[in-house]
Image (cartoon, one colour):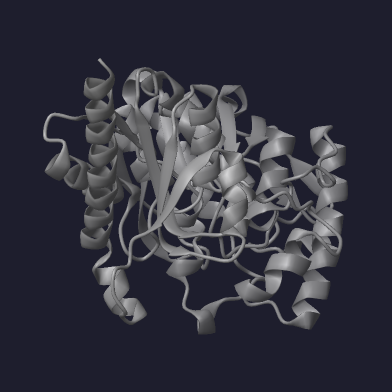
Length: 388
């Protein structure tokens, strides 16, 4: 039998790679000779680099860059030399997890470190990029990233602007003459499940600003500053992107990528599936096992298990999804090609214990499913013998 193992991470419990390994252990405890093809998945957020490096045979590269507050941080990204492909998570340098809640300031947080990561990858020879836009603590429209790549942002007195979104209220001109030509000629796949525009009540500042340290006054100030930024960015890049879906992703980084790079915005899981050659690996498979920490009605909105199920359906392969929590609304997923939704927690426990036990629980759940599959195969063989 052939199993394709394509889980996302189980947040705070195990990575996608660890989840795929646990699934394989469970399968082999029942079907020792099974072919298990591990294809760790992600949706553009946390875990995208590790999942794609594992699936594509790349390496993890570490380099020192600036975090959102300008402090040095050792950040990692993925690089696949044979493909000249760099996989970068914005959160590695501008992540919300790098800044304590009390220290978050959406007015001054900068994406400069993202530009430094891109530069490091360009120096390595990258000409293709996958950028995961999840988990940022910034709200600067990507201005810091553009600056790190050679762009200059001037006020009306031709002075360089300070870092951060609030400074964009004084923006008068963006000079792209010194923008790294290698970045201009490279191609960028932007992995994001955020469809928010840059501005307005559904824009990046109004929706995500408060969790990044913006109080009501800061939300108003940043909205006005990004309105100026959008106008100048359109004038100096020649592209109007503020209204496009995804322009507001990662505090407006989506807008900068759409305006100044050869880029396209896609569902994160689609980017990862394509890069990991998931559909090719589904050939000849009997079952697909996928999953993530929580599965419920929200899984329909571009989450990893749904993307895997869609790919499996195109190839006629049944899908079984595992989750730490199978929540309200999950029943609609049976209409989307899922054969079964399997909760992995086997006994009452508190959350910390459930997270710690995640790999063992997932292994046991996979083994239990495989025993049921084996029973079905045995019953089918017995019926066949009786009718022959």
